[in-house]
Every structure is written in structure tokens, then in C-alpha cells.
Length: 405
Image 1 (cartoon, helix red, strand yellow):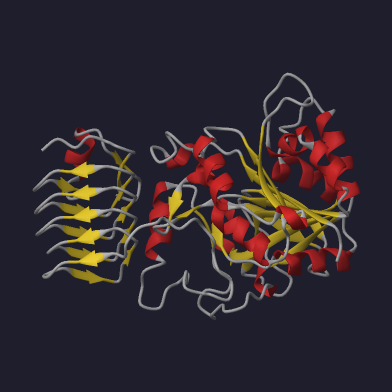
Image 2 (cartoon, one colour):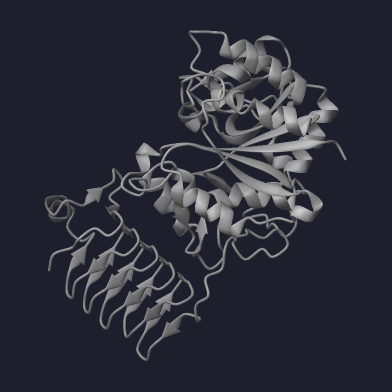
């Protein structure tokens, strides 16, 4: 096998996910009841056989560092590791100035590991992907950099960084940031390639590009904004079609699923994708598992009179004589008699009082909803009480937010 070092970029603030990121880094935000967002990227790398993984952290990283240290323990006997690497000002007095600068300041990792290829993944997307297939495609192409591209309708591609390919459909002619008129694909003119934020580099090519970028005072020092366009100009960049990626156990419905959960609405929508009868994204694929830590808790309990439909309820939670529909319930959540929870995400330790209604909402850890309270029913009232209401009408309460009777 080729020598591969995996680097996960996990330093993002996640401002658009506030208040969920008020006390934690975006990759540490809980997802799917028992996971953290970073678990998806790490699981994809480990399942693909890449067991030397450096996670570059920066903002509010305590819970993220703790999660990685307590959960992602690989065999030190075999030299395997998933290691959080904080910003250390190794190349000057600045903290990370961008995603490219994060890798540049962590150049010691590359020098020590001596890899032939470097896989660089983001830490905050929900998907399954066999990274080894992308590495094989990169080696076969002879490119210095390969960008993972997902097919999106051309009319919607203006929201993304878009890849314009050469006539062969593999080489990259242009890398466009949110273009007004996105280019179509060679084999599908009404589709465009959106960048997934996942890259494979030949190690020497990446080191050369990082050194050149670091010396440019006008650069934003960003992987997608500076490094990839630089390598496109040099004719050294290729695209990898995510649709080619075949993960064991995937269904036709979820095989090319990928979600950027960078906003409250997309975070909420991605949870609803998990709970339909035939999930749009299937967490129950044991052939390509998503790994995380397992709490030492009893199974979920449902009292007489409880009604739970199209929902995930995690360990240690109790649903009394209440109704839960199309929702994701984390660990150690209590839903009291007569309460109604619909299209909502309740994170660990939330308590819903008797007769309370929670609708189209996200409740962060340890929120206590008093008896009879209404959340997500009247958005004007929600705002008056200091709750966040997203553009899509999702009411969000931050960690431990007080809810007055």
C-alpha cells in the first residue's frame, strides 16, 4: 500500500450553527442522537484502512479533544493513531489563518510521517465515503491534487464552490466560488460538480503549494480558495466523481448522500433524513459503520401510553405517556406524560415536562422544558422569550437555556 497520512480539518467556528457552537467547535456538535459530526469523517477514513490520522483543532476544542481522546483509541502496538493537534504557532506568532495555514503550521506531521500521499478531509459533513477509492483514482490520474466533487443540479450549484472540468471530464480547468452561471458536466449538462471539501494530494505537490501560499501576503491561506486554484492554474488538479464511490452496504437511496450541515436548517433537515421508514441516510449500515463512544446506559424505555413513530431514541431515555413523531432523541432524555414532540432534535439530558409541546425545534443539552410550555408553536413568542428562530422556522435553544413556565 502507498504511504498515506490523513489530515482532518476540525478548527471551524461554525458561526451559522450558533447557539449550538456557543460552547463547542462545529465538528464536536452532536448528531444523530449518539454521534458527533467528526465521527463521520473519522469513520470513513478508518473504514478505508487509513489509521494514521491527525485532527487539526483550534476554536473551543475542549469537548472535541476529549471526544477524540476517549473514543478514537487505535492500536498503538501497530503504530495507529487518531491524534488531536492543537494550533501551536510553530511557524510564527499567529494562530491558524486558514485551512491551508493550519496544514502549513503543522508541517512537522508531514515531515515525521514521510507520506507519499495526503488525504485532507473536512470534519463537519454527514456522508459515507471510501477514501481509498479516491486515493486510487488520484494515483491513476497522475495529478498533484484531486478534489471530490458531488453532482448537484446546475440551477442550485451557485451556492457552492464549483468545478469546471476539461473535455475529458477529469482534469480541472477552473475552480469557481459560487458562480452566477455554473458550468455543466461533460456527460450531464444540467448538473455541476460542487466541491465536497475533501482532497487527496501527492505529498511533494502539497508541500510545494503550501510553501508558496505561505509566502503570499495577499492569500487567504484557504485550501479551497487558494491552494486548489493555484494547482488548477498549474494544470495539476483533477476531480473525483463522488457518484463513483461504492461503499459496502449502501442502498441506491443513500449511496451518494452528502450533507453540509453548516446551518441550523440544514442540521435539522439532515436529522429528518435519518428517521423516515426507508431512511434517506441509513445509520444502520453495519458493513460501513459510523463509530462513536457508547455510554454505559440502559436501553430506552417506553411507558404505557407512549406513542413513538418514525423516530430514533437513544440509550437511557424515557418516553412516558407522550407522543414523539419524526424526531431524534439523544441519551438520558425524559419526555413527560401528555407531552408532544414533533419534527425535533433533543440532545442529551433534555427534559420535557407534562403536557408540553415541542415542534420543529432543536434543544441542546440539558434544556428543561416546564410543564405545559410551548416551543416552536408561536415563533413570535419564541423570539420574545430569547430563543433563536432560523430562516426556515426552526426554534433553537442553546445548551442549558432556561425556559420559564
